[in-house]
Image (cartoon, rainbow, N blue to C red; front, side, top):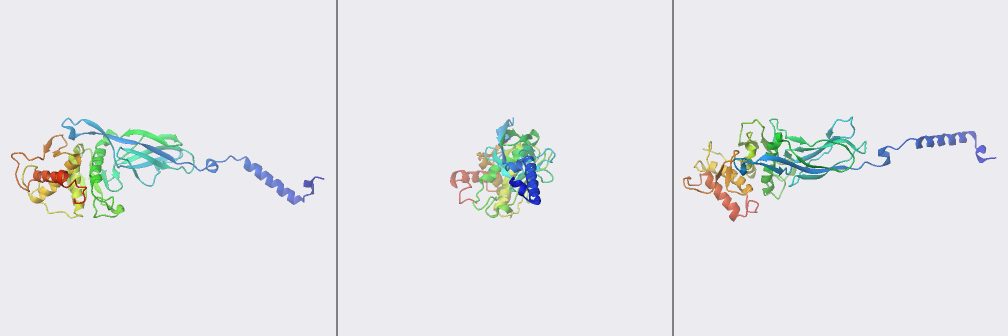
Length: 337
């Protein structure tokens, strides 16, 4: 007699049920998540913009530059039925050549992404931003990529012409931030040691703006429509903000400063604050002049006919530049600011 026929009826029934369950389980295919955990999908690329360069003369030729230190985010959706949304919790930043890499997301319900794109913002982690009237930074998205299952480069992409001046103003301020002398934190001055509580520079600009250029003590630079074409103008106004932070939020009482002129005497307070802003821009750009958005310029070197004395903005300009370039070793030297 076969062994199986000797089993009690209940035990035989249990064995039959277990066998049926195992056969049924074997018939169900493994899902992607059962087979193996999904792998991270990482994006890379380079971001650039075109600008009309006032520094290159009144013809303002178009130049292509990298966007440096801008926020980078990954957006997309795993399934075609999902709404596109932000995938990365923290902002990454473009490098000095406009490149980024290791912008990664691991799918949770599939092994690939239905669509994915890279979003760039005219902001750097609450340090400075170029915003619209509501204070929101400008955002530009790369074209969508579809059915992405592995690391992919978006190549070199360029901001739209409509946003070019946003990016020119933003990228120009990177020159000032990168040259500040603050070994304590990422903030603008050593008065602020907490990276999570830096005072942010807000740059208000729009394509139809006629308000500017000027700086207000609410840590805001106002630029008119074509002002971003002049890096001297952007850095001059940002230089007021920088001086404000070096004074830890204090600002002198400024008199006889509206209007003010490079070659004419005003007040000592006007010559100092405007001269510092002029000199900061010229120092960062490696020259001895101021350039207006139309490409015209004025040299700070003393010429016959200029007023004399320390109440003349242009004299402060030349003196500070001589100190920083020839004596103090630049404002990043330990003795400066």
